[in-house]
Length: 105
Image 1 (tube, rainbow, N blue to C red):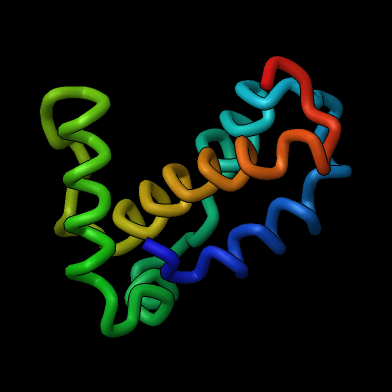
Image 2 (image 1 turned 120 degrees about the vertical axis):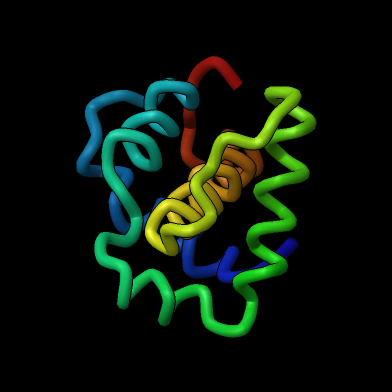
């Protein structure tokens, strides 16, 4: 799924200097787990737009493949956005590993 991938990539590029670590795992955790991408229900709904169900399906597939079950609360748009950006952020960091000179790639 490519929904807002360019925006998430730009977020990585814009904020990477805010973090001391260059370890891909730690950076992912700091960027997309410790800090939320979107805060607020209204902003999250707006961000999801007409792709909300595609995003939910993408999250379900990821969680089932990685955890064997789905844990995201889909009744909260903020949780949906932040889980989606967590997943895509991870993918993007791995794709950009060499470019960003990250470690443990």
